[in-house]
Length: 131
Length: 164
Image (cartoon, rainbow over all chains, first blue to last red; front, side, top):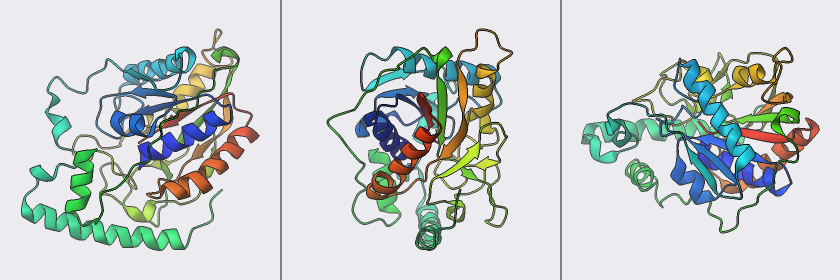
């Protein structure tokens, strides 16, 4: 939901005259929604601002995002970072891949998923005060 | 996206999820150079809530740590934010280094007054947290207008949004 949320927010800000750039790792969702500017890092979800514990990677990634903000000629501008997560791209196949889970793992995840859904529902219906 | 649809269907969601989709995309050009601009920051990360279970690096998905209203924090401080409430890739990353998903310190450095030739003019006084809601309607009707109002109050010239 993170990528859809920021995509909708970017669209709303932009519609109201405020330029935006999204930093994200799920290009398909962001482009499907349709946004003005995206800096895409082909990293595991959770690292939109560069590699963990790697200052140079983070500095470079932010600089790329600023360049997209400055130079995008129009909407739907995506720039892909040249940085790679690892030489072996096999990590890309694991995320939310039902084909890679055993029936026992699926049953376990389903039970946990139902439990988390109930928790989220409780919070949603009793929203806490937030600043 | 198809893989995510298949995954959640296998876990028991009925109808496949429909992501928001638009033919038209708005665009606003920068009005001044970044070196003269005030930059805002929006994140989907959540403030740490000690009473809401494990939110540490590598913690399992923790819906109790979710939030459903926009929040704001002081850009000059170092907030304790976590991402245990979202579906990041737990098999291949741990969320241990918040700078890999929340570049606040990095932006502060780029705006440092002592940094002659600063890359950005300044950082907006607050950053903002956007709730990750499955409902497009909730995001569009409640959260987007609230984010816009806060960004306007901050007088931000441009905004960077981080999707975890």
